[in-house]
Amino acid sequence: MSQEKVDFYKKQKRNRRQIMKKEKTMRRLETTILIVILAALVVWFGYLIYSNAKAKNEGTVTNTTQMNLSAWEDYTENLGTLVNGEETEEEAAEGETVEEAASEAENAEEAPAEEAQEAPAEDTEGAAAAEGTENAAAAEETENAAAAEAEE
Image (tube, rainbow, N blue to C red; front, side, top):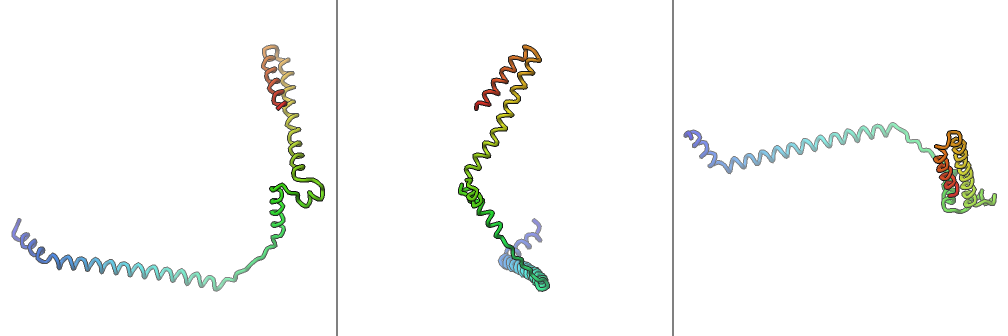
C-alpha cells in the first residue's frame, strides 16, 4: 500500500469512535425529521377531510321516512305458521288444515304423471306392429318397463 493510504487508515482508526458517533447522530436526526414530516402530512390530510365533511354536512338537511310494516309482519307471521304446520286464520275459517291442502296438491300432481306414463306405452305398441316382427321384441320390453313404472 502506498504511504497515503496507510496514513488515512491510521487516522480513521484513531478517530473511529468519533466518526461512528457522528454517523449515528446523523441517522437519528434524519429519522426524526422524516417522522415529523410524515406526521405533519397525516395531520394535514386528516384536517382537510374533516373540514370538507363538516362543510358538506352543514348545508344538507337529513330527511327521515317512516314506513308502516304491519302488512309485512302479518305476512311473515303467516309464513311461520305454515312452516310449523299450524292452521292459519283463513284456513281455520274454511275448515281446511295445511296438511289437507298439501295432500290435495300431491294428489293433483300424481294424476297427470300417471296419464303421461300410460300414453307412450300405447304408442309403442302401434309403432311396433307397423314396423314388423324385428321391433316387436323391443316394443314389448318398452311396454313392460312402462307398466313397471306405472305400478311403482
